[in-house]
View: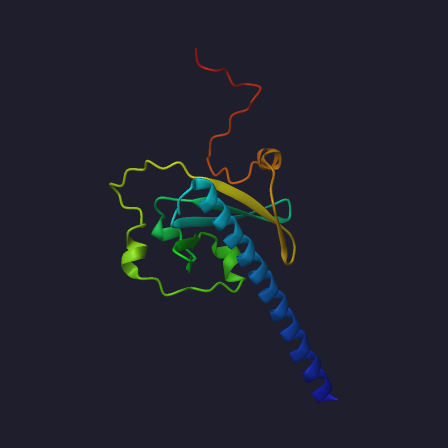
Length: 167
């Protein structure tokens, strides 16, 4: 009888691991397709992408952005896709996921690390996606982004009713 319980526990753990693997593969596939799309729209390869995570309204949202530099202090993981480096900035979400950490040439990685005297002349492009179920992700409309105030980490909020434009 103990063998049956042990077998059931092993099967249950194996099934849960497979679900997490499917979620990661689905997420990775979506990220790669967005990077390909952004590269095509920019008419050049960006080479650096950052991915941040925010949980709002019981839903996981991800912002995939082009970038000129990244902040090394905040990185939870990174990987390489084609000639692009992908930087993950979400410790809480990614610690629960299986995220591959590639061995990236340190010289390639170092050229993208933000340094104190760096000057930014970069206008990032981004796409926000949300996790609709365990293994499916869809793009978030601009209206929904505004309504949910996604990825706005400033500590200043302007009430639209009180806003007076400058003269």
